[in-house]
Image (cartoon, rainbow over the protein chains, first blue to last red):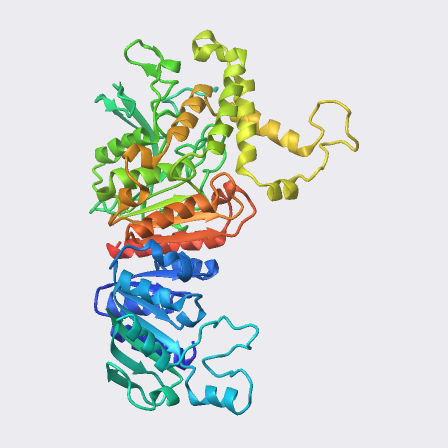
Length: 202
Length: 377
């Protein structure tokens, strides 16, 4: 696991309350679920598109099922989890707005992390070089990227506003300095942050 | 069948208290033949029931005294194996209606002192589960660490979890379904008709009349056996290869290896299975419909249950395909239940759950370990 991922994982873990029920949408091979179980004693459940990764989760003793965030969130009852996590996944879904609504229906709160398309290096890539940007957080070429709905920090804040979702906390992870804001982030965050983690609630 | 009931080396539990059945009648004297492995701990918290499938038996991890073959799941159950006999106390009982020692159509009806035959009541999956419940009550086990089973065994697991959620910490239904589909019923009907068409079946009275419907039963087994495999596995194993000959015989002998294999499967089956038992057990499976029996949707049946589930299916299984298993997973998710689901890539057909599939073993082991950690075994 590269450092950045480790930092994300620790930050998200710190936002989850002790002993709560958590759904990790796009749980991969269960790194976050493991961390939540160990450090927060959370009762975790994972949803993951790739069966192979689901099998890895179960072999580690984690609860996980194969499923598609775009289709399968509707299965879960209202407020069935204390917290729903969508880490670096929303940009790869086909209906982010619907997913955000679903997350708020299923969870009492949600933690969402996004790669920021407003980051200066991204702007530079497209604005100056005239090419689709490739950065540490956006590793793919335009033709093979799973990221079909990229947004900036400001875009995400706008969408939350439109859906009457409260942003309780914004955290900007960085290997050098982690910035944490109660509520919305400060000025220039959109320009200087590669990614952002939001704690939201209806 | 050539062996005598109640003579096989295994444990027996007998109770002269009527067992009420789903069809409204009862069995006055219940015998459950079972095997157990490992040690029940002081707290009696490490017990696991393994439920066998249609043609299975209680000899899950020990040599079968009839066939002299190894236990039917000894690669899964044993010392250091995923269902670890060093850690858990494992019980496997012959089902009610079976013919390997538990009360069934070959038993003596205490009312008439004669073999039950077709006077045996039509039993259901939930009757089988209730017989197992009697056994664990007798053993003084309040709560099971897990109930595990594939195929018909998986149906029993689902029924356990639906009727006695407070008795199960976890449930592992494998390659199964919450109800028998038309296709499932159709294949069973083929088998039953084959048995009943055999003149030696004698209206079910063959034991009394000293005949044996071996032809019918072996055809039933041949039909069923094909449904446990897949086209890919048949092609890989047999292709169009001929049996001990270079050219076809232009006759109806077993020219092809697959024919010879199936005939062998049929013939060996009749040595260890009873024809009436086959009728009763396939009927119990056909009647299985969890939603109908419980009068609720799957989601409502399992809503908010504390039992943890691991469901497993196999991609090459067309008898109880992944979609049937996924339906249960979805219902559980919708009910807010803690559920895991593994769909294992395999071309071995329905039988895959009995065969070497390392990814499945790892899931089983990891899941059971995490369940037992919860109660610090």
